[in-house]
Length: 294
Image 1 (spheres, helix red, strand yellow):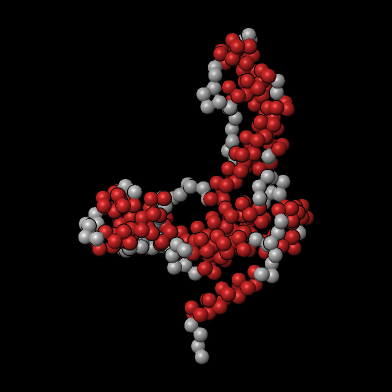
Image 2: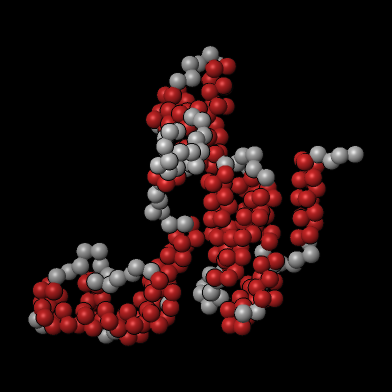
């Protein structure tokens, strides 16, 4: 007797969930130890254990995305597992970050990219208002109509606490057919595809997390540097001249300490050089980012 594709998918999903029980969860200390073994000794067994110990995290995140639309759960899990592997390879156990928190960004990044590449349902809801409308627009329209109320964009907007313009935009998106990015720009030419005309400078979620992590470490280590390596005058110059969004003038600081503008400039330059050396020593990854001290 033939087995339907849907039945096969359910069976495969059930088998996968059953197999997860063979991989126990890890403590935070165990995750750091495994990560160090992989980083320092290229221990592939340690890397594999770090990954398998977090497979349930991928399932949890994938299920959240699965609620969005008719997307095969195993596909989402597969993409999330790729993100988990990437996270395990890049994780720094010496930084004050839980592996699960770090890995979640990579998992979501890979799942989100998969959905963006393959499923329309996610692309059309990018803001909080749009997501609310995506899930509730049709239901609200039907409910208002059943109540004898004209379901205008204004009425729907009032009901859902969004702007009428957001309602109109979502209606257009839902009604607009998908167009292949691989379709030619013109039917009668070979001038390329629509995809060739699209550019994006937005960093990935994983890159944003890495940047956020480095910024947090910069702040933490700058405070340590200030406490350990600067005298009272240098601390004031660091805070009010180098780190301030509205830095005081050299003349103002010179008058405060009874020295010339040139002397303040020299001290400022010395502090910046010392701080750079300190940060690069404490945060090796910082050199990959465009941080500049003025």
